[in-house]
Length: 238
Image 1 (spheres, rainbow, N blue to C red):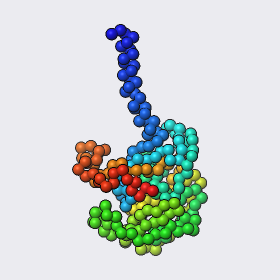
Image 2 (cartoon, rainbow, N blue to C red; image 1 turned 45 degrees about the vertical axis):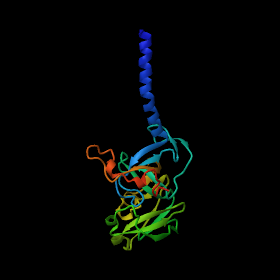
Image 3 (cartoon, rainbow, N blue to C red; image 1 turned 60 degrees about the vertical axis):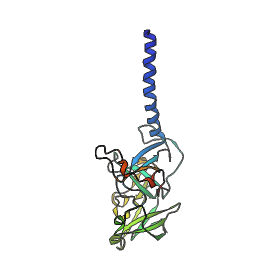
Image 4 (cartoon, one colour; image 1 turned 90 degrees about the vertical axis):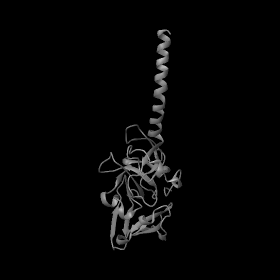
């Protein structure tokens, strides 16, 4: 084999190794990215260890490694389930439901949401069948109707009856988020608003779900605990 042909073989092998990596990075930058639900703050719609895909192109296309928009074609809507960077530590990712956007006035009374004076109606719901019965003890479930969709929310019985009123006005360029597990969620009620630059994208689909991860590899689902009824579903994402 000549030196020229050997050089060509090595360059072809190198390109065959590099292009799939570039393709994967491009997809993660522009289109979708996987995310694992780390907590129960979105119960009953998202469970711990639900694996979801996030649509990073939901609202536009950002420059690589930047918060600046290259192209913009959509706006977040109340009711959207969105992954974003935690304002107090941007390296940490959170997932919550969008309640209100820039300029909106939010009022929460006894857990019930009103935005700009319009209440999000709630109706009693039975506990979801996919949750173990012991998981439902001490909680009440409701169907909450936002301006664009409806979804289930959960309240702790000991907390939801308390007479508590909270109010906020969302500043420009920011958003107000809450978890669906209303009394067990750290969200905008506790740490404030999320800047627009911190938004990652809308939750799209549950592609994998399990009750626990492998002890020997915490990034992999234990195949013996797969939740087959949640695979390739949207849950309460829309």
